[in-house]
Image (cartoon, rainbow over all chains, first blue to last red; front, side, top):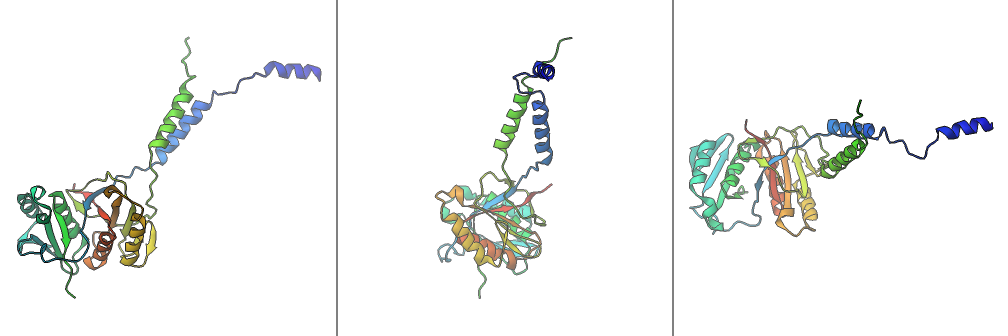
Length: 137
Length: 129
């Protein structure tokens, strides 16, 4: 018995074995790298004013965009997306006063979100403030 | 033969793990929605943190922060509740995800509800290729 104890004591040391720590850590890193999905969300910002409509903001001169299915009309003239962007850009909206930056957005029933989104994006990118036109009930 | 010093490898590896853990942000969007996002050349990478997430799937079902809700009024109350504790404009951003094919009757009331509740809409889309 005594002989065995002596032999065991010979092999014991006071240090914690840390040799495999780096292997464990690198395995953890690889796990995180493989399991992680990077989400890249892209969006447009639209701060829609809320509240009741006022006659001051909806004057005849306020630029209006009408959407009907795939058709885009800017001030009652048919335009495509590039044309809409050009016309909005020509208004130089970022330099205008707050109430002159308003663009009315009117859409017919059934207008798909794709077209609506593109119009919103064009207005937002050109510094406009979107005002949604309510349907008359 | 000279042994390569590997004593600090463990430290380096654990530092890397801590770095990834601190820098990573856990996705809060619990809904794995099947939506076709609209395209535009003007979309940019969202930089601000969003206060809430509103989504409408291809069937017109509305979700608020991952939970299904009945109508746009529920969205309005939900956004109001979330924004009640905010103080700056940067905290008012609400992510809005909607299927590109949905008609106006489905998505516009929800957008109006977000606006009425004081949220700034972050409409999610994809960049034109």
